[in-house]
Length: 254
Image (cartoon, rainbow, N blue to C red; front, side, top):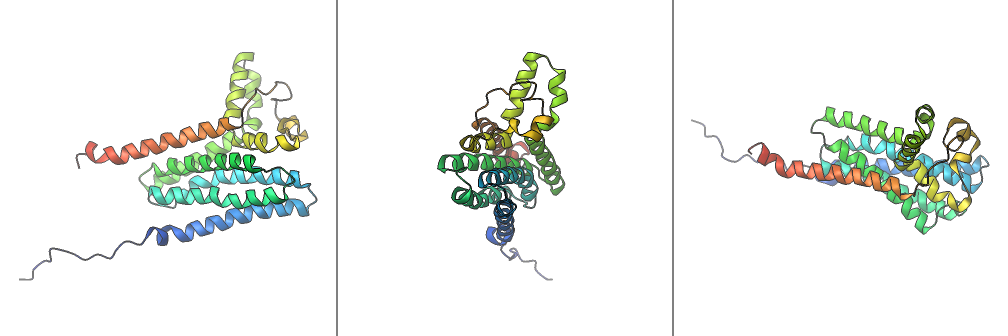
């Protein structure tokens, strides 16, 4: 009678670098190409360096907010998902260095640090939300949800006119403050635009689309407020994920 071996030799799983390294490299290359390419295009189109730099900062902020969750969903473990999302924010440091050199004074050391902090917490929140799901379908759903949430937050000045017009003075001011507190794009321009006297709500196109600034004065909002709120969201998601990982076996009796 044939004996069944007690031990089965299985091949070792691939290293984390082999599993995630190629994806991280592609993400970094695309991110650097997007940021530096857009800045170069702006300069070649005749934009002043300050305007090209601010345009690039807004575009990269939108890229970080929209792409971090979906790119993280390609990993089947939390570490891989966080690394992929972090590559979006970390590779954007190259764009910040380029803007610091040729952006007409928009980016200094303090400003660059603040912008990177905003990008980092935005990417981390997207990754941890996506990786809170256990199945590929769940991660895909969370990725879509986080991208939609980030887009809604960054576009709050565009979809809010009807809502603000329907509210009373006190509720309107509280709602307007919340819309700015959750808006990373607003924070980036408030942080980087102050040195070149860029005021978002005074730009012709946005002034005609947004009631805030036109009919209602924008409430004073510190640039770090969105970083604080998105960072708190990331911390909460990370804590929930950690607790689930540590308490899951105990709750399920394994």
